[in-house]
Structures are given as C-alpha cells and as structure tokens.
Amino acid sequence: MAKAQLKLVSPATNMRTVMPTRKPNSAYRTREHLTANEVDRLLTALRKNRHGQRDALMGLMMFRHGLRVSELIDLRWEDVDYTSSTLHVRRLKNSDDSTQPIDGQELRGLRALQREQAPKSPFIFTSERGSPFARAGVGKMIERAGETAKIGFQVHAHMLRHACGHVLASKGTDTRTLQAYLGHRNIQHTVRYTKLSPGAFKNLWR
Image 1 (cartoon, helix red, strand yellow):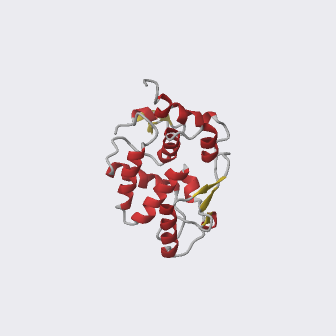
Image 2 (cartoon, rainbow, N blue to C red):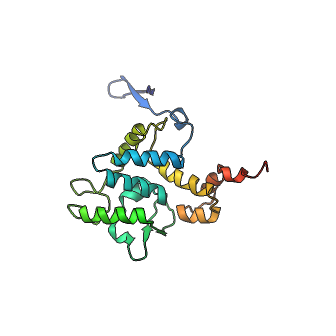
Image 3 (cartoon, helix red, strand yellow):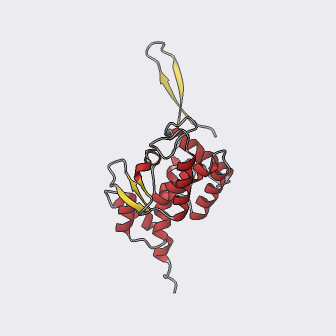
C-alpha cells in the first residue's frame, strides 16, 4: 500500500530526506471495530498459530474484557481468582480499574496455560523465552490473523476493545454499566458505542 511522503531538509547537509507519513485511518478501513462474527473468525485464525491456544486466549480476553494491548501484556497470575472466577483489570490511560467475571472458556484456557508455562513467570502471557509480550508483537499477531481470517480490511489489536463495546451495547447493556466495564472516566467515550448500536432502532418500524 503506497504511503504519503513528507520531505524534510537536513540542516547539516542541506539535503532533502523523504519520510513516509501515515494516512488517516479512513484510508485503510471504514470502521474501527469488529463485529461478533469477525471476532470469531479472528480467534479461529489465531488458533492456527504455532502457539494457538495462548494466542487465541489473548484475543479472547482482549475482546471479553475490552483490554488495551498494554493492559493485556501486563496481566499477572495474581490478577486471576479461580475461586470466584474473576479477573482484576488494571486500566491504563487514567481509566478506572475493575473486577470482572471470567467465563468457563477463559478459565480452562488460563489453567492450561499456567500448567504449561515454561519458564514460569508472574505474567500470564509470555514469549518462548519467558519474557512478557511486547506491544508490537501483539499488534503484528493480530494483524496477521486478520489477514488469515480474510476480514476485508486492515485489522489492528485495539479493534478488539472497540468490538467489546459495540457487542455489549448491541446486547442492550446500559451506558453506565458499559462505562464502568471499559473503565472510561468520561462517559462521552462510552456513548459512541451506544450511538452505533442497532438495538436503539430495533422497534422503529413496528
């Protein structure tokens, strides 16, 4: 995909240097979230990876808990309470922390990952060397999975957080609950999900 270019002049050499500049998001895709069906396809693609169980669990938890990439890779085993089936989510970007339920699929995946993790680490998601994932690594993994799943546009990891908001809004989740779940301090950041929810127009023609 061709990129726009920006010409800069070096003071030392008085030579022009051509630097690539990124186009706006609208040039790459028409929306910033995935549908529930697209999330399923993405997770199926992640399961085909060499470490498919781990990678699919990463995608699933980003979606189910509306996690940013930095929040995902900072998850630690101490954040998981198997007894109460809950996950403590530490939010970034001045967002509010929360404790959220974990369903059976996530619990089974977490237990299996914890048993097989070598070397052991306080972090849930680690590389083969035992170090926490880097943001860029997660981003590339999700982007490749989007291509494998033939989503139809360039997928980025933050779309899973947006997908969480849109899917919960379409299920009728009230705005205040959704705000608390995603950790938004400003409710205006949450309203964008409810505005685009098809449920708001469901009975207009009945």
